Amino acid sequence: MSHVIEKLFAREVLDSRGNPTVEVEIHSGTKFGRFIVPSGASTGEHEAIELRDGNDRFHGKGVLNTISKIKQEIFPKIKGFQVSDQEGLDNLLIDLDGTVNKGNLGANAMLGISIANLKLAAKIEDKRLFEYIGSGTRLPCPMLNVINGGKHAGGNLAIQEFMLMPIGFDRFSEALRAGCEVYQELKKYLKKKYGGSAINVGDEGGFAPPIDQTKDALNALIESIENSGYSIEDQFYIGIDAAASEFYNEGKYFIDGKSLETEDFVAYYEEIIDAYPILLSLEDPFYENDFTSFSKLVSKYQRSKSIVGDDLTVTNVNRINMAIENNAMNYLLLKVNQIGTYTESLQAFNLTKSKDWGVVISHRSGETEDTFIADMAVGLDAERIKTGAPARSERVSKYNQLLRIEEYLGDNATYCNKL
Image (tube, rainbow, N blue to C red):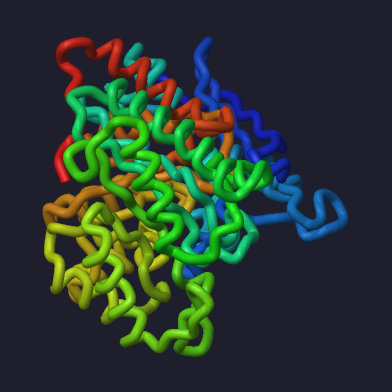
């Protein structure tokens, strides 16, 4: 039986920062798919463009013009389109936009339609979303952002995210429980050491303590892991998202009260890694166009450390190919709103896996209650997922969805407990 796009609804709703964002519903018969588009704060310069109104409403962040584009420009072109033809729909959107960076229709408009259609297709086939996406049955390792710095917190800590990685467990639910226990232990540690204001949380639910040294944040995590009764390296590793472009200026990195030239900053990471073997994953350790420095870390540590490209590659196959040519990473951070359609996100995933690199499916700092990325991570068999601390409902909603998926899979569920 043929199912085509019959109706479309688009509306302005709120993200986790209280900023407006796009929600799209696509209907066919009695079924519909709905998606809410997230938004980032530390965005790479090569990301697809999200359109904002730029007027007085919401300090310029309104999306009513984007909603109008969806209803008036896009819907007439896709009405009657086969729901099952995801690639065809996405290519149509790309052609309608006609720009390299989605600057005409906006990545927020295009992604809302793309993922809403994907969800509708899953419902039409009476499949759970992760089953429709792929054949994966493995739950990803959560990367829990428990200390926020950089643009996510507003303090003096340069590195944007410090993440717990509960790898040494047999099931996702066990790993998540352990991560939550360490999170609560960290709360006690920070409150005792720095005072009550130290447990205020940042955009992603991690604590935003008055720490300005990288090593102090790492020490806080290590002590909290040990105080929780868990084993360093056997059960827990640590990841960071430096988001280094945010503290880079004119050839220098400003971190830990220092100003470091690029070569000195490479040495800085080498010293940190030597001092903290528990540090496993380094995301965006350098400025987003510095493929050479990324490559130096990859060459030195090979697969023993995860060198993750986010702003470096922005879920874009052209940028990923540049990373391949330069041997500049061994893990991709995949954010669907960086590129604007599901098909392009899948192409980025497949290209990365063709190199036998790992993939982290990631949220954005401006998130919503939508749980799509949890299903995507399992369906595509991604190794890891980033969706914030085990706090704030827009973060926890993804973890809860993964718990549901694990329960549904039963004995068939496995957990990505490899490095």
